[in-house]
Amino acid sequence: MKVAIIITTKNENDKAATCLEECQRQIDSLASDEKYSFSIFMNTQGSMGIESTWSHASKEQFEFYIFTDSDLSLMENAIAIFLENSEFLRHKAIIVGSVAREGELIFGGRTRRGRLIEPDPVIPVPCHLFDLNLAFVPEYAFSKVANPSDIFHRSILDYGYGERAAKADVARVLAPGILAETARQAEVPDWKNYELSFWRRSSSFLVNIVKKIIMAVRASI
Image (tube, rainbow, N blue to C red; front, top):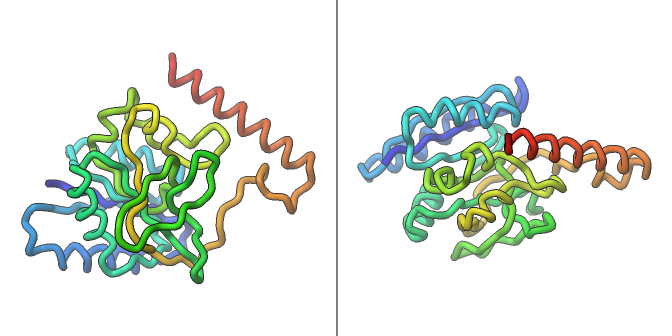
């Protein structure tokens, strides 16, 4: 089975080379299991380039896609954990990796309203939405949604990805344990940043809603 690893770089000074080396090390450690073959794709356009990089990779008909940001320090068995849990779930679930900063959760699986969910140390647990900073998405998930690119659309209130997958009845789960560490601060949209003025937050909220409505209209045409 073919696995594509899509590494998204955030800036010119991040740890892209380190992330690439770690991914290759984990791939080499799985070499004895001839069940999987791996290809790595670099996305240098940030979050806006994830969809186009996936579109390019999908032409090679991969069964699975692992998305990771290049500034994450992956745990030594992160890729194996994704594959083991996917097999347990019959390769029909989106699996999200929890990312922490100094012990505090920064990215991972979320509730319907965007609250981060603590991972169980042993078993996968359900989540409604998720961050795409570290995630495993089977081709099955793309095939189930009406438009495969919908996987990359955030919820209307910007709480995370997964709303379209939920509507298509694709399972979303949080992998066991913490799968990566980061030095990055949590990303907070302006409308949820209470250090900004009420008017700044209100304006940001309205702009966000308008953008989501325009995207939804375009997708329906």
